[in-house]
Each structure stands twice: as C-alpha cells, then as structure tokens.
Image (cartoon, rainbow, N blue to C red; front, side, top):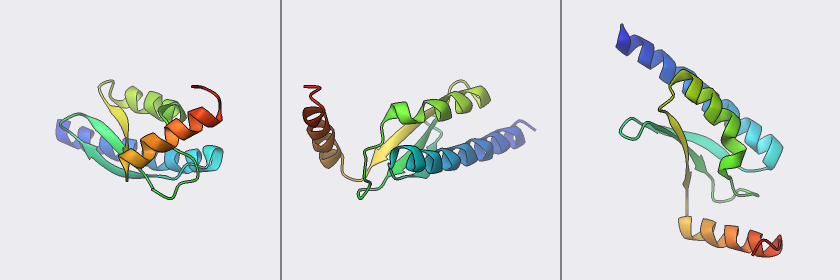
Length: 101
C-alpha cells in the first residue's frame, strides 16, 4: 500500500517537473528537461541543455519546489548541467554584463 502511494507521488512529481520545464522555457527562455529522480538524496533532477539561450537558475524553479514539497517535504529539485565549467563561465560573464560584480 505504501509503495503504491510512493509510486503515485513520484509520477505526480515527475509530471510537475515536466510542466515546470515548459513554463521555464516560455518565461525565461531556459531549456530544461526532466532527467531523473535520485532516491538516495531525494532529489528530482532537471537537465539543462548546453544550447539553451539563458542559464537555468533555482529562482526559476521556486514554484515547482513548493509544489513538490507539498507532496513530500523532504524532496528537492536539482539542475544538472551538460558542461559545468561552461555554465560557471556563463554565469560569471552574465554577472559582469549586468554589473553585479
């Protein structure tokens, strides 16, 4: 019984992740897709494509995180990057451009 509820909750959370990827793309032009759920760290990972126009950031996923925590307060949302070094360089370049540094 418990395993069935867990499976249903995971399916529901996965659907929320997929919907959030579409919303982030439309709102922020950041290209994300659902990657996987890691039960060891209780995290749903979204994958950012290397060719995305804008870098995905956690503030873009705040609504998703709230919805997922309503299902299970221990669950988290993570972002996987194709090329972490490129991502960090892009973030730095973006901060320089926006005069945040």
